[in-house]
Every structure is written in C-alpha cells, then in structure tokens.
Image (cartoon, rainbow, N blue to C red; front, side, top):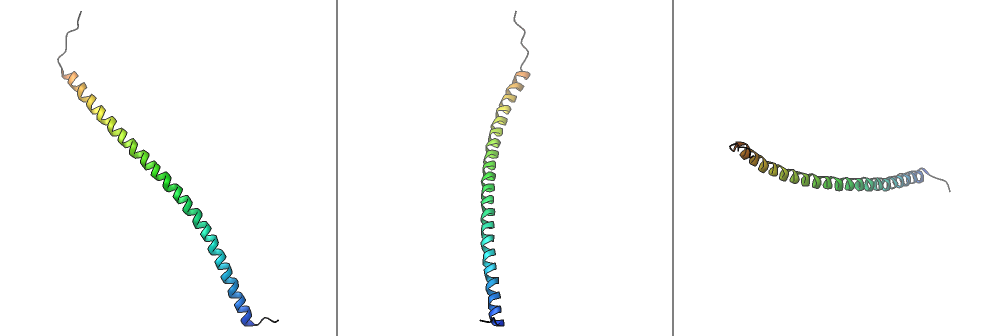
Length: 86
C-alpha cells in the first residue's frame, strides 16, 4: 500500500494531535504539582497568620499589665516620703 499525500497529511495530523494530547497530560501533572505546593504554602501562611495574631494578643495583654504597673509606680513615686523606722 502506497502512501499518498492525503494519507501522509492525515498521519501528520494524527501525530500532532497525539503529541498535543501527551503534552496536555504533562501539563496536568505539572499543574497538579504546582497546586499541591500552593496548597502547602497556603496552609503555612495561615498557620503563620494565626501565630502572629496570637502573639499580637499576648503583646497587647502584656502592654496592659505594664500600663497598670506604671500607674502604680507613679503613685508610689508621687507619695510623700516616709521616715525610716528604727
């Protein structure tokens, strides 16, 4: 059976389509890998954001305690001096 130009053209189209579909499968795998890595990064970012929020709340509480202590210290410093005993 001799190959005519029409047969060669059809064969060429079939090869191109096959290669194209094979490339799609490769891209699907690459996209799946990239999406997996993005999901992992997203999870890490969310964890870091929660940690930062927790640290921020702790810092605010510490600042409130320092403000309370500061006001007590100022009252003690402003109080009249007492004579030492003894």
